[in-house]
Image 1 (cartoon, one colour):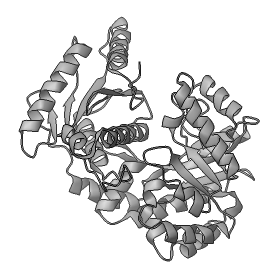
Image 2 (spheres, one colour):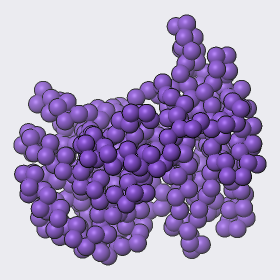
Image 3 (spheres, rainbow, N blue to C red):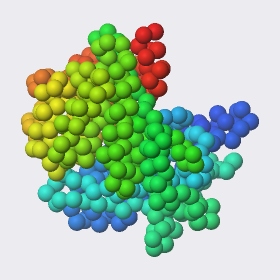
Length: 428
């Protein structure tokens, strides 16, 4: 029921999931709150012709992972699915209440994420893809077949409309929504009012199932668009050149709250490309940790591969300075997209965090399990701890424990929670 190339749900799986949502609602005399969008990559055949099918396949895998990460960040409540419908077409559907304005904003934000340059596929350099998206909110009686047909027709219509990146299936007009400039201004006001909240995703030891700490995640409850996750927060901040302000706000709140945690609990904070590019980041961050009265020995800094592509050597120096003060360093989202193993050689790493796409299929696909075993052998040879993300089933947990992972995080044990809830679960 999975697409062989990307690991996403197949057309059949998507159809079955949509039918399940609608049938469950019908049994209760209700209409399922389903929202769907179909993303298509413009002129994708030209990529295969220009660069070869291996590059095209790599680009599709990268797009699939970007859509998955986007969905994980934006949909913490309710069910959702991501499927590949063939070629360069991807379906994202959510089973939760959502305003028309929010669904359109999510489509625009997803298009931005997918259009971000793709690097490292081969010697061809940087590749950019230009998506268009069709949107709909199915009416009662509109089953999967009709949903797919209407979205497909609308996507074709969007391709013929110059400058139209997002199009609704009901008449072809987008809603006024909330313009980017207004959302940018909203974020600055939210920062001033301390409205950006921090939630914590517990991290668990596989040896004894004890919670050893948590990863800090930012959330913003926009008054009109609803909840906005950390990834899109930073996209908005980049447009306004306020990434450093947002990053410091998140770190300050997380460090201050974590200073009240039971002794020994670890805090993981994400470090952005803008942080690492700043010449004085290490000194300022060390002072921030001291001012918040948090023990640096219990602090882990998580960095992603895309944060390092342009400044690997300078990033290594910055991280070495922070490690000298007791902090640990983890390479986040390992396996999501292009893996540069030079990172493992140059960077002063203590751990790698396996992306959820490295975990999803280990219970049903021998190749996925073989890849996991290869990564585990490499990590152990380098003396690196391994944290698995996105663990959702007991089977996945049993496998990663058997293969030697050290820690995990995921919905199997706990969803992201408030600071008070985290303290309760640790002390309870």
